[in-house]
Length: 71
View 1 (cartoon, rainbow, N blue to C red):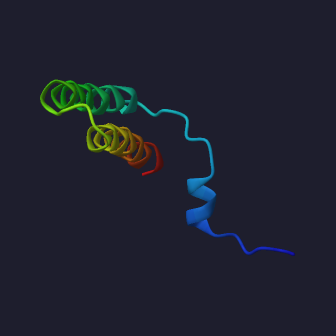
View 2 (view 1 turned 180 degrees about the horizontal axis):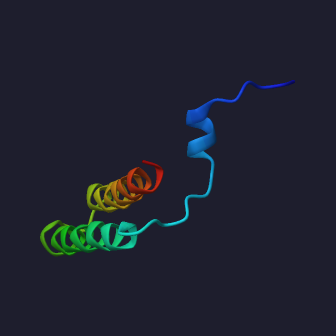
View 3 (view 1 turned 90 degrees about the vertical axis):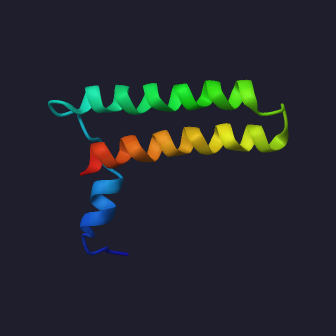
């Protein structure tokens, strides 16, 4: 089955080598997320909800970094 090239699929499933300035952006995003992770860890009762918050924070970092890499 032949597929027509879809630019979004091609972009989303390709390796994106870091361009100038991107590693610093990744580090800033991770650093700020880490601050929030520590706040959640300190202020929230150990619970399923706190675990989900940490998972969603990790997802947010992933998607923020993907935004930098892909665009």
